[in-house]
Amino acid sequence: MCTVLKVSRSGFYAWVKSGANRYAHANRQLDVNIRAIFNENKGRYGAPRITKALRALNIKCGRKRVANRMRTINLKALAKRKFKATTDSAHKLPVFDNVLDRDFKAQGINQKWTSDITYISTKEGWLYLAVIIDLFSRAIIGWSMSTFLKKELVCNALTMALFRRKFPKNVIVHSDRGSQYCSHEYRRMLKQNNLIGSMSRKGNCWDNAPSESLFHTLKVELVQSNIFENRDEAKQQIFNYIEGYYNKKRIHSAIDYKTPYEMECA
Image (cartoon, rainbow, N blue to C red; front, side, top):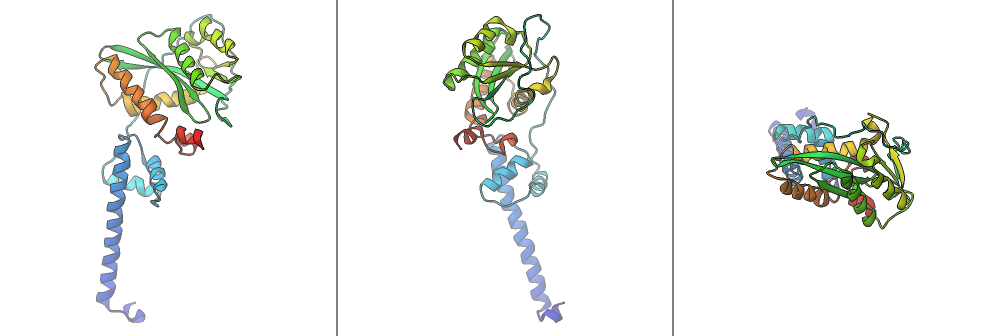
């Protein structure tokens, strides 16, 4: 081949060696960028999100290459665990029909909201968290935390969402059939504010999949990697996660790898 191309064998091998060096250098630089994104997001991003983040920085690379480099430099995103459900649907209170019917797409803000409750373990005892999510942007627009799993928990989260969104009308507000959501006070708030109540079918978590997904993400990315000494510490960490990270910085596959903030400001 060298004879045909009229080049020296030493020149050919020098060219091969320099190419290998360039590839190794490119990998080293890519590793630096991958590690920076991984650390910035506290180990919460896997290969798909890191690839999107790299491309946003005009760094061209494929998902498989990023996954390979992460294995090489021993980076692994936080893994999931199983968590206990908190829904108490063993009651005879009135329920709403499933108006949402698993249609989780929205064309704009304040069309469809979902809500749910989860629990956070602390050394001081349980801390309960209720949220309201706007399905258009997946932003957490209302939230409330309490020591007690009572109706005030969901009513306070809904109140925050209403104030933040300037009391919109005819919004579908979907939840499970938990007793807190079936309470007279919560139903009265929906009626007084011209909101459309919607509830999952009994025992069907898929009917409220966006809220379940959020809590899965919260548990994986924050809760399971921390041991909270007390409820106040947990409240501060959850506040920082929701308002400082989730709504403003975390990209979501459901909204084309944008942040909720970017989605609403586009």
